Each structure stands twice: as structure tokens, then as C-alpha cells.
Image (tube, rainbow, N blue to C red):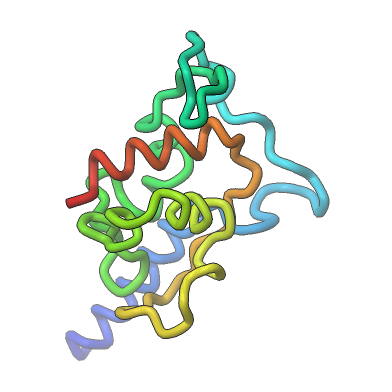
Amino acid sequence: MNRDVLRRKLTALVSVIVLGGCGREGHGRAEGDQPAASPAAAAASAVVSGRDGEQTPNLDGSRVYQEHCAVCHMADGRGVPNMQPPIVGSPYVAGDEQKLANVIRGGSAVLAADRPNPVANDMPPFGYLSNEEVDALVDYVRSAFGD
């Protein structure tokens, strides 16, 4: 068998395995069902001052990342070549916090259509995450994977 054909078949197999947990809309839920509150929100243990001075739970952004993002972007933020983009050094991660939060809430549909290096899979929206979870995730991703 040709090496390129074998590589494509292996890549397709890996994508099926990896994408099984990527949080695609409707995956594992009946239509109209909302996902349960994430364990990260349930695990909030302290109250701290939030971005705008409001009181918010002290959430662990790395835990939110592991639960919702790592299956596609990988634990090291390097993604899956040609399938899921790396977020290490991404201009979206290093750029404006609000734009990053919008990408998290709205998925890849909010990105410019002409973005460089498009990949095979779209990021689903994570609009069901609480504002506190999104804030914690933005803080974690920027500190762990930004430049």
C-alpha cells in the first residue's frame, strides 16, 4: 500500500477517535438538552474580585481547559496537524481578551473566513460555559499558551 494512502487512512482513523470527544453540537445529548454544569463550576471554592470588580468564583482555568479544550487542542496546546489548530503562539490567544472570549463562546464560526491555515474541523461553540468559566479559561490559555 502506498505510504500516502496509509497515512491518510491513519489520519482519518485518528480524527474519528479524537473528534468523538470534541463537544460537537448534539454529540451525546438529545436535541434541545443543555449540558450539565461543568465540574469546574461546581468545584468553585472561593470568591475573588473578578475583571469588573464583581465577586466571582475562583475557578481553575486549567481544569476548564482540560474538560472542554484539551481533547482537540491537546494538553500542550499544539493541536492536531491539519485537523485542530495549535493555540500555542496563536494571535487569537495573544491578542484581545474579549475576542478570545468570543471565539470560546461562538466557536470557529466567529473567526474571519480568510484566516490563515484553516484546518479540517471547526471548533464548536461553548456558549453554555458561565462567564466565570470563560474568564478563567481566557486567563489560563493566555498565560499557558500565549507568547
